[in-house]
Length: 624
Image (cartoon, rainbow, N blue to C red; front, side, top):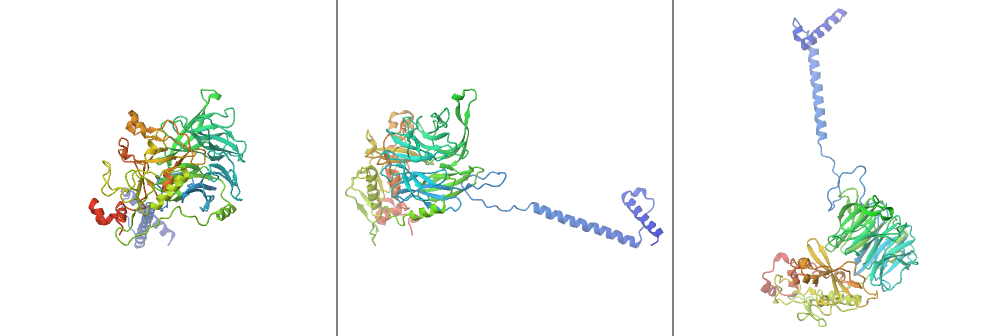
């Protein structure tokens, strides 16, 4: 192509572009040669292809933006959904150390531990007597605890690696609840002297014992602050359970401060955060308890330094449960949660709801958890394994002789027991457990409380109290009632502690021991419920009684716990208990062994006998 032709072609393209953009300025039509027409067609086709590719890319991008996010697996817990947190998600189990706790099994309480890293459960004590209230030394080498192994409750010290056991207290009265000073040089504990519980302190070798609190009301459950300046404890001195501080150091040493000061609530189980700025504690009684966190702050504005006041700067609900203990890094807590007969240790994070997980659970009583900063060493674990008994005898053995006829089991007559309503009979499937429980109560209290009972066996045709069901476990020989006369006395031998579980009311029964020298039982810590106060009228009559104004002195045995050891369970009060005495039912205990009432009846009666009184047996209520 010559230079002239090239200029001519460029002129055609300029005129074409001008015609496309401003056709009114072009005076004559634009014509293209065949080759120019081909180039124009290729240009249009190229633009179409580019636009198509661009549209496809945008479509894929939009599809990717609306795709589902990746699925994240979260541990399912009964707490609400976790809130968004910045930074790495913290572990709810905290960091490092080991958790000691008490497990009651086979009628005895022993101390166990779990290392945070391996989750291996190790039994630390195995004496036939009860051990409880564990407390790690700051260096993790020793464990202080309370034990009844010497014939009364005392504070002991266990060398975890060497196995040496040192008895620190030797008074005939009750000693328990040890807590270490942060430098490991001293131990504070609760002690029963002169008819009252108070806080004492001693050197870590048991010497130089001195009394800290002197109030006539019970003071107990001490917890030493991380900076060593104060001991938190529970006191009943203002008519209910409050958490106080006993100041150890400085010009205010010896001063006692009520930090919760809540007349309408009960607080217990104080536990310090590792930085010493926050107290975790239980609020509410057993069965309806929650854990709260309170930050402490001295208020000095407007008052002199010597009159400064300790206030709760803030209080937050942490969750359901009781007996909190802090993770060594302060990032979470372990609490105890109970549902029916099962106990759980739950680790939960402070940084968000839902960051919780089960640490340990058992079909037994679990409590008194304490989280230490130092894990159990391999040597300590090996020593504990070697000391653990290979076999432990059962609490009792049921001897039964099932028959091939109908019914398969018998009602056994117990001639050495007096019943309020005639002969005492129990199913042969539970009579041996009752006999073993009776012997245990005699040994623990010194009194044969089960030699004279209320109602035990109820014949098929016996009338029942108005408004109560005839389908009682008395009829099939799996229930007994304690003698109410022990409660009705002017000097009662039975005290009742009210426990609300959900919407139901239960009673914890305490029996007074014969010996009041510390060799039997232990002191009460909370005020029992006074059912007799309903006779005073007023609010007590409406509420079915009231808490006693003072905690009774003396030593008592928890019958409810002993009965559960042998499979005998308490029952809730019925809905009219506040004004109808038979519905209180504090005296009633049953051993159902997972049976339905109809299955229980068919064990000791023929089907014809049962249906003659109670109608047809529902097939869904009996095992195939």
